Image (cartoon, rainbow, N blue to C red; front, side, top):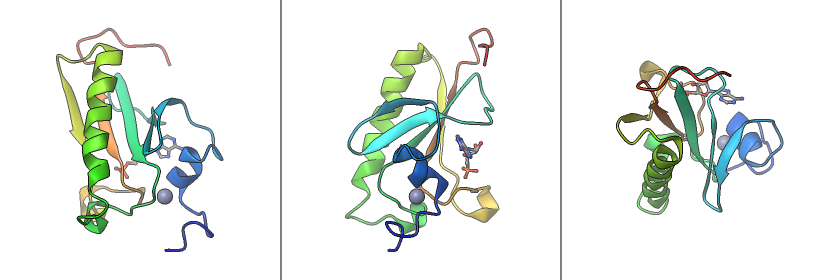
Length: 118
Ligand code: AMP
Ligand code: ZN
């Protein structure tokens, strides 16, 4: 994998703090930042630090990060007060609308709240 040398992946740059993003949470495994083009009152992206193209590139060795992503989503729901309803979505592949080929989970919620100012 050449991602370490040829850093052409936008999400690799964001999690490495080499491109700006509104990062709300990060730890050794993942980062959470606001989607630049939100489609819900709260629209976050949960992104592993390690570059993985998509679900198609998951295997027994690297799949553990997905459970960490789900737990991060649960924490985000608590922090944003949207436990009453949120949606997690992972687009996989071109036909499903995947645009950024660095594994990520969309966190969407907040429909019951007044629109927040951005
Ligand atoms: P997907 O279609 O699942 O690949 O989703 C990619 C998402 O990344 C889209 O919702 C974009 O709005 C979002 N996105 C792309 N570039 C950035 C960026 N620089 N900062 C935050 N979100 C981004
Ligand atoms: Zn990447």
